[in-house]
Length: 501
Image (cartoon, rainbow, N blue to C red; front, side):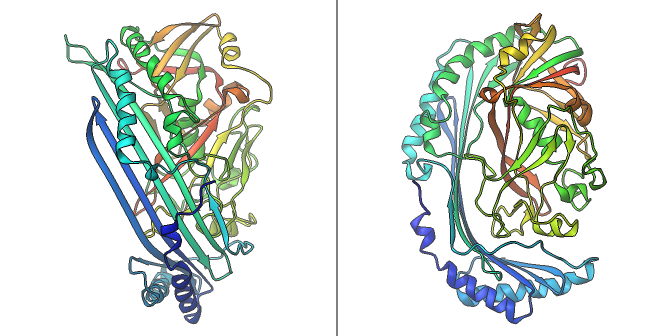
């Protein structure tokens, strides 16, 4: 069982926290919290089996946040002495005094029980940073060679992102937590070049990023060897495939594509700060405004969506958020109706929603916590409905796999998504690949057209490392689980004849 890294535990976190929180109390802060964070991120990139780039960065610092006379204050730094920590508390209080004139309503925080001396470590077997860099590079090269040796593959790109995140949190209410998360994102892309006209086609692996360790690259949770062995033949079929005819189709969408539609049209739309208009400059607000809670028909009756910061291997999973809230799972859409939002303590208190559901996160010690996305997931059907069952009920449709480009408006309402590969469905059978496909809809029309969801065996936890929000911008990793699902009579565009690739 992995444990907190010894080097992080050796840092004087408790001493620094005591200095900062004691000084904040002396200055009259109604609330203060302290974070000591170490974030390590490494990237390996190969081009045609050769090392193209290698980075290994570490950020280590501390942050103090206060509520003073109803206003937020924040300060951060890298000097790890008690005197420096106390000065950060003074700076945070000074910032609160300046920002008070901009605060229309005093800050209130939803209550949370104290969690003293709590420790949490994510679910992984082997920290990738404990694996020699040469071994990691060799494995990427080995997997790249599976693609490079195949006919019709002209170039191969491979990338592995590895993250180790440590946080120590303490606040004036008595919560003290120490946590560690590991996550990895392997990605492989095969490229075929048309020598006659200079055009190219590409296809990427469908393996999602995961809250796992090095074991993910060696067969735990995903069989990369098997997937990459199949990819060249799939790419060759894609190259020769006809262009899709635009029109209305029933779509069976695989989780490798549907996770991104969930992220953009549900995940962001149900962040309460967006729904209330507090978040607007970065990627917009939300059509799912607070007055629609409990009444908005988000989708069909088979649509059940949860937010969850506890699911095993989830990229957004954590034991306690950056406001000291013990994380949980919660309903967002139930039987197609909007029933909940993602919250932090301020949003929960402002709208009288009770306890926060633990969605506060800062991506570095230099940033203040924001309300960030939980693992927002579409729940599967309790029966054993398979992907073949979903396809078997379609006369005229398309089976969609893998994510690619996307577009959505600033209200999270009108959208368009493409994918990695597409198969025609004719009378319940797959009938070969087509290309140049995009599906387009409004959020409520799309989810309202969902006629069936697959069973638990079709469920996959997808996600991304790079969800952006805030000014200054912050980046968070988040997973979205879902089964395969059937959507009826969806508008399909041809990306060549209606806008270009």
